[in-house]
Image (tube, rainbow, N blue to C red):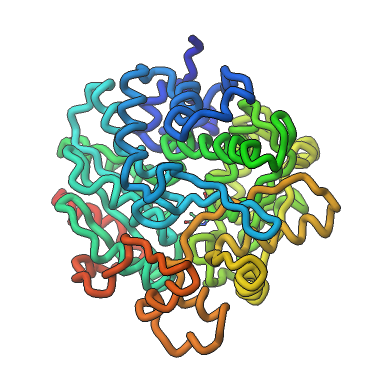
Length: 496
Ligand SMILES: *Cc1c(COP(=O)(O)O)cnc(C)c1O
C-alpha cells in the first residue's frame, strides 16, 4: 500500500505523516499541509453504488490517512457517523423540482461542518496516541458561525483536549450565537470578538505562528491544533460525500455509472469545494465545480479574472457562514493549479498579506477552467428561497439558496444540461429570520426563536431536536474581546 505524506504549500522540506499533519493543524512555515500527491480510489465506480456512508468513508479516507490502521480508521468512522445524525443515510440526496440537493445538515449542529467535525476529534485522539503525544491539545478555532458549534459538539469533554472558539460578535445569526454561548462541557471556551470572521481567522493564524507563545505553551505542556478547514483532518472526511452524492444520483437513475455530474458549492473558506476537487482527482467524474458566493464575491471575481483582490467592502449578509474575504483553502487550490510550485505560493501569500491582491499566471488561469464562479446578492438569495418553496415545497436555507442561484446563472450562461448536485450546507432552522422573512413578510415581526415553531408548518411538522428548546438554555459564555486581544484571552484561559 502506498504511503501518502504531507508537505507545506509553502515548501519547507518537512514531510510528515497524516497523523502529524492533523496534530499540527498548520505547517511550521505558515503554509497548509497538502498530500504530496493526490491518491486514487482503488475501486471501480460501479462498486461504490451499494456502499453505505461508513463503508464509503473508509474506502476514501484510507487513501489519504495511510498511517492509520484499518482498525483505527474504522473506529473513528463508527464513532462519528452514528445516532448523532438524524438519518442513517447521513448525507441524503433529495430531489426537489428538477434539482438534486445533497443535505449535509443532518448532524448534531445542523450544518455541514458536522460531517468533518464529528470525526476530527477521533482522528486527533488517534493521531495523538500514535505519535505518543503527552501534551494537552488546545484547539483554537475561528468561526463564521457553524464551525464553532460543530467543533464544540465534537470536542466537548474529550479528555486531553481544550477548545477555544472565537466568533464575530455581530456576524452570526441569533440561533448560531445561542447554540455556541449556551454550550456545556468543562473544556470549552467561547469568545465573541469585535470584528468579522477574517479578523478572527487572521488572529488565530497569528497565534499559531507566534514563536514566543509556542515556547510558553511548550513549557506549560500545551500544544495548539486547529479545527478549521486549514486542518487536513477536516478536508479528508469531506471528500467522502461527493462520492456518496454520485452513488445516490446513480441509484436514483438520474445518471448512469460513469456519466459526469456538476457540483454547486456555497463557498467561503474554499474547504468544501476543494474536497470536491480532491474527489475528482481520485477519479470521481465531475464536469464543473460551480463556486457560489454571496455579496462578498471575491472568489467569483478571482475565477473570472485570475486576480484575487480582497481590497473591497466587507458585507454582512443573510448567509453569514460565507461572509469571508480571505479564503484560506484557496492556497491549497493554488498549489494544485501551479503544479506544486511553492515559490509561487509564497509570493502570492506575501502579496495577499502586504497588498491584499495577487494575480495568478496564465497557465494557472487555464487550469481553473473546471470552475465556474457566480454570486447571488441578498435579493436574489431571498427570492430563490420563496421560489423553490413555491415550486417544490422544499425549504432551503440562505447558503443553499446562494448555490441555487449560482446554478441557475451557470445553466443560463452555459446551456450545459449535465445533472447538478446542489450542496446544501445548512438547515433552514439555523436561519429562521431570513428564511421565513423570504417566504412571507408577515414573519418579519417575530424573532428568530419564535419563528422556529412557525417554520414547522413548512417542513411537515418536523423540527430538529438540536434547536427545539434553544431559547430556554442558559447562556454560559459571555466573554467579548477586541480583535487584537485574542492572544491575551487565550493566555488567560490557559493560565500561562
Ligand atoms: C462553512 C459554511 C460554508 C462555507 O464552506 P467553506 O468550506 O468554508 O467554503 C457554506 N455554508 C455553510 C452553511 C457553512 O457553515
